[in-house]
Image (tube, rainbow, N blue to C red; front, side, top):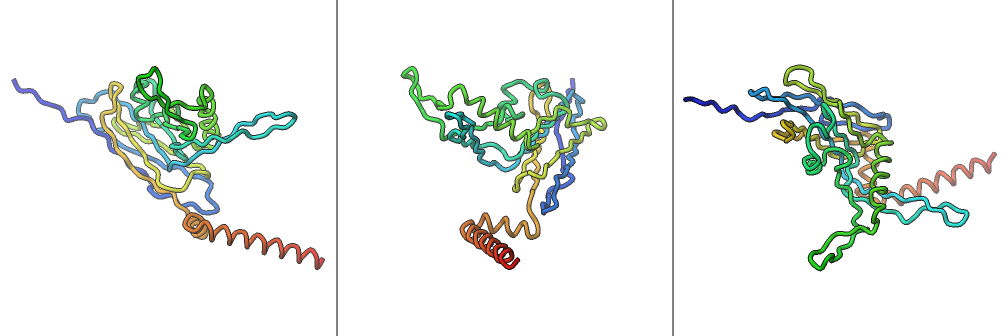
Length: 251
């Protein structure tokens, strides 16, 4: 008796652009990702595309009323949050895979590992082991939701349950919208093939978002020489103020 073993399923994908140039007139753009599924067994498949931008610390404060005044509370700084994040799929994520799989992959904004390290401490509980405890307590989820809400409002976080479309047998495409506020740096696109609730094949693609022209020169100067950039900016502001003052005096 002769049996044949089918090769494992595989996925392939590419971006229409791998470099986005940002200047003063940049108003956002759309990147198209297209790909193909190779599966001799023609099994039911799902595709999830996750695009992450460079990580950025997020500083957030809560308004608190002190007497007749509203003031900002002590800020909380979250680390590990991508500056840009989108999870696109051909159907809702919770229909594609279970909670544990999605959590391990960080698929969906609810599964992003966003933490506030300065608010954490280690305590011994039950005399058995050390545990990481957040001083934010029950408010942690409220703070985290606020971070996600602000990012979503800016168009920087998104979950698109129908962002991946099958255009033919085994062929798919997805559109990734980059807003004007998209951070500068390296982005990673993770394309995952799911079958029976499990990831069976994966591809990684990179995307670079960079400033060009005078904006790039100023950006590099500000990041490589912050002291000289700050002094130059202050000198320019003083010169502009002095020039405006002189003009009004003459009038």
